[in-house]
Image (cartoon, rainbow over all chains, first blue to last red):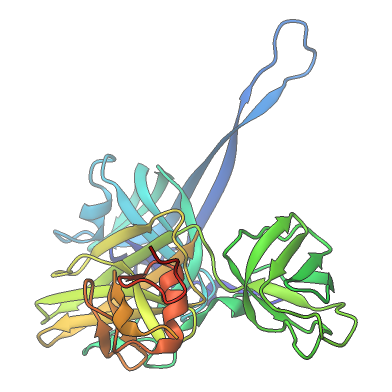
Amino acid sequence: MAKYGSPSFAVFLVDGYNVLAAKLQAFTSKVTAKSQTCHGLGDTWELNSPTGISTAMITQSGAYFDDASNSMHSAFSAAAVTSRVVSWAPTGNTIGKSFIGVQGTYSTEYDVVGKVGGLTNANAKYVVSGQLDRGVIVQSWTAKTIDWNTKTDGNQVDYTLDTSQRVIPITSATKANPCVVTTSVVHGLTTGQKVLISSNTLSGPSINSDLAVTVISTTTFSVAVNTTASTGAGTGGTFVRSSTVNGGAAYQQVSDFTGFTGFVGKVQHSADDITYATLATFANVTAANTSERVAVAAGTTVNRYLAFDGDVTGSGSITPFVGFSRA
Amino acid sequence: MSDGKDYVATVELTTKDRTVVAVPGETCEHVDPRSLEWLEQCGAIVRVTPAEDAPRG
């Protein structure tokens, strides 16, 4: 398993501001499932019942903020009612690597420790109103000067290669029409979702491909392949999901913006890596230090490949960072 | 065999080289026929003429 240290923590953006540049010394994020006490008179032990509600909290400490006007210090020390968008990349600034984003982040503490020259040393704590989204980087935090698309550059993100996915073992696959697949653990699939099956022993025809499933039970599903005439025992193999069916969220942060008069970013998806459909479109950006979260509605299919399209107006330079989280 | 002319795009569709092959409301004759099935399944295109195997009357 890959291990990531301090140098891997390559991106930490709050409302388009680069907090890493401020020599951040420590950072924590914590998700807590809330419960409520439900004991009464006569009970001898405290009883708790889950509420189904989770809260997220992030803290940063030891950063030196520039205290010039309109700088990070003035932005972060603003009233606590300001909702912020926060994105970070703990495993490197590379397309396809892990990304985490939160929106509705309210600072509850901004603690000035001291001042050195024109810099303010401060700690901050944020409580998140809403959910914390985990996903992948679809556009790394890199300066751009012309229109671009990550798929054109060969940097589309393939969901089947996502190492955070569970690899589900297959117990058996029937010689039938349709073929019924049994798994040794709960598969967690939804009818209509697609899976990439590999290493199953059926052949002629095989089921080792990217297929839509029809769920039969928590450990069985069928795929639209007629395996009546197949050879092989139909045992073994694994699958990973190649699409999700419950929408998600796209995050964009723009830390630098000079020269251009506009910038529109779009997250696109594809099932076949041939044609791409727009999944989420961000608002036109005209200045630096902007951020946005675009929700993709629950029930929306998000296909196997993700790409980012950047469309600039005029000439100049822009440094965006974009992540997408599948729900 | 489905034809792109039978479908209208609901979102912008592009190729890998950034060529826009359909914008929302436009028919899909420039879309690669191999992509029509999944595009319809996820709602990125909608059929505007009945399928040949659809019941008549």
